[in-house]
Image (cartoon, rainbow, N blue to C red; front, top):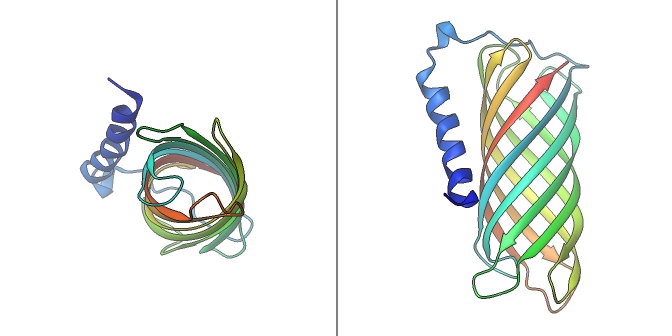
Length: 183
């Protein structure tokens, strides 16, 4: 089984886990409050529909956030993406970014969120290198599996812009499965 198929199945397994665990049996989870710290990471699969990065992509993210209120988190992220271009050279992208996340609730076993992020980095292929700027918008849900550990499932839309006139701006839609720890 290829890595892309495995990564497609992971978010599905996470969704089934979230849907099949009755609310009464899920850990309540840590209550968010100002000063809470989140360390997390996710992996995802995206279909970059247009532009230079048009292809199937697998990415890994690491992030750290700080709650400025009980419902608002701000933080930074590192993203590494491998884009498989059909009939072309694969592309590797590395970017650093800042994000803001708003939650619907500060307590409970399940919580939804909306996230806005901005990333800057580089994109390399066998033939060229370009600077990348991206804006991302995501919606997601988390489920606590322990008092301070949650599994996340998110749908993210990204818009890419390049500084190189040979590169074509574009967008991508990703499904991400992640784990976060709260302190």
